[in-house]
Image 1 (cartoon, rainbow, N blue to C red):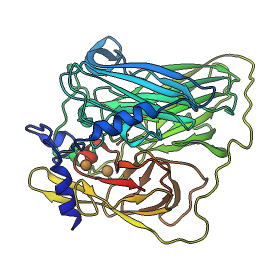
Image 2 (image 1 turned 120 degrees about the vertical axis):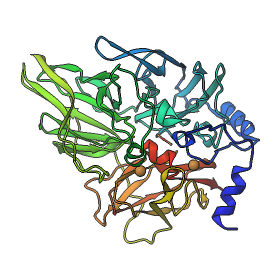
Image 3 (image 1 turned 90 degrees about the vertical axis):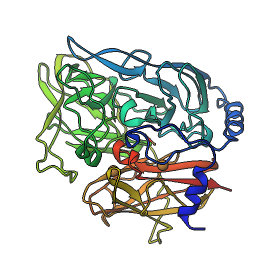
Image 4 (image 1 turned 30 degrees about the vertical axis):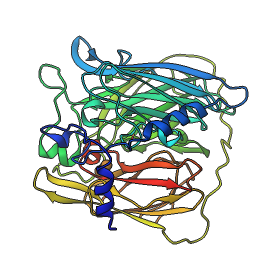
Length: 473
Ligand code: C2O
Ligand code: CU
Ligand code: CU
């Protein structure tokens, strides 16, 4: 059976979601439908989630709703968010805790929440392949253990180009026993939003946006336009940074000063890395040790010029996200060890790729262009066996960069355009340069079920640049 037929078969599992006119603004023109027995797997996962010895259950209520929010001071915008705020509340836990999250949907359309980067059972992944979306008025409980320390985030996996853009996202911080000690810690969720003249969020639209993804005209840190942050002179802080933007890459600079990279998507890296800039593709996270700065300094948190090969004729100049005002000095008790964590390479020496993932596009009568994986929109990919080494070559045949995201599992990047990265890390999202290629390696642990990988530019994801696959025994 060709992969085309397999995909067609899996679409016919149930009723197609109502996509309505302008369906391409939603998650693709292909309906994603959970198998009719999804509830059994869900109920089993719910019962199986137990905290590790000595750990606890963290209860969280998330209410998705529409409300007024001031992205810019004095100007109110109809936003969507969790618990009346943008971003939603930061969910905090320790390794081994169980998160029990009750999602109540007060929106007028279905939603569901994906736990980006958390190694949850497939049934808790929040995608349209593993659950029926939560209807307006309904409550749905997610329950899973968090096995890894790091900075993660949550967001809907339904109608993303609207639901995320309007503010439905939040950070997740999971702490290990052996964290470096910094003087303070902050979560900075970066985003952008496209506001019209009256201060309202523009609905998705237009072929340029469909091509490039939306880069909004208003840059946000923690839901506020270009805020002023303060920190004490002489201190070193841990900043956990999340790029929640639909399409914008952030080539982050903090006043051009050096900082230390402590961690990436999948938690701490082996040893701190000094840098003065770092690129966050959409969905990327990075943990930094920032400072010390002198008293009364002012620094700008900016994104430097970065070309992701858009269809535009210009590359944006440096763009401000926030200003840091350094206040009076305070003593520092920061201790950042030289060894943060041990990471063993999962591949050594030369290996052959076990899969080629080809990112591309093709003309579409309905949308002008559809984005593809291995030549198809919403590609149905081969299954992966638990415990079997995966070496994937992600080959970008298009003239624009794509942030590749794998659900549920961390990988190591072996090479970007043939060059090994500067340091070893665990990632769930990696930028694949225009016309470039990235080789990753990962091993499915024992969490069988339905998973996916896709471009995290939300418009590209919606336009089909994704694949579904099963992890099997
Ligand atoms: Cu943030 Cu399907 O992902
Ligand atoms: Cu799909
Ligand atoms: Cu893309």
